[in-house]
Length: 228
Ligand code: FES
Image 1 (tube, protein in one colour):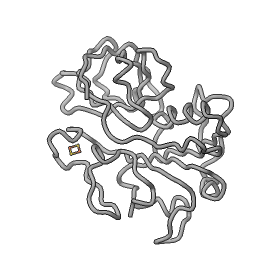
Image 2 (tube, helix red, strand yellow; image 1 turned 135 degrees about the vertical axis):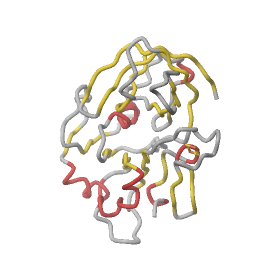
Image 3 (cartoon, helix red, strand yellow; image 1 turned 180 degrees about the vertical axis):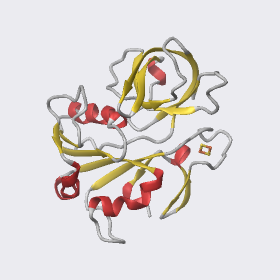
Image 4 (tube, protein in one colour; image 1 turned 30 degrees about the vertical axis):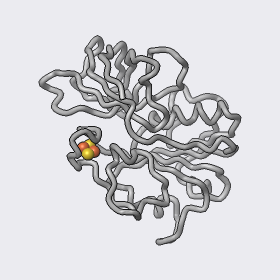
């Protein structure tokens, strides 16, 4: 795992909060679903925060990062960054129908997966109440109300869920209690991850079918069927 000082080169306010772009060494940039842990060093910035890439891996140091960023961050601030950390998405190379949905968040964290799926020739459907700016034209956007139908036709489903709703995935997909998701499915579980596994603080603990896991280290992406 590497460490670096990264400059914030752009910040903008979005509906999901502050988003932006940092300059990050290409070999440190996280894969879809992985994250960097960043701290500005400012006294207003109490704990490190996870940074998720919000765009394609294009081999350039400019890396779009997902909202919400700490409100105290400013353009031209410098960040102490380490990573990449965690386990990301495992998009099957032969997946041809890919469905994605973010619950109670922007689709930013799923955008690298959108680009990865398009690059391997998959048809991609994003379930969203509002089509995000910059969504590639090849992506079909459907309302969240029809997300439960995706488990019947998708080769691969990716969700972005807050940890507080991790146990609600069956009701979100209208899958009966105790039943498994019929398609290959993974979930990015969002949670504060202040130590990134370094101090084993336990803040990010998540109960799964195979026991307690650390979202920061064992995730943040999990097999959906592993969630209780
Ligand atoms: S953030 Fe400390 S153990 Fe996960």
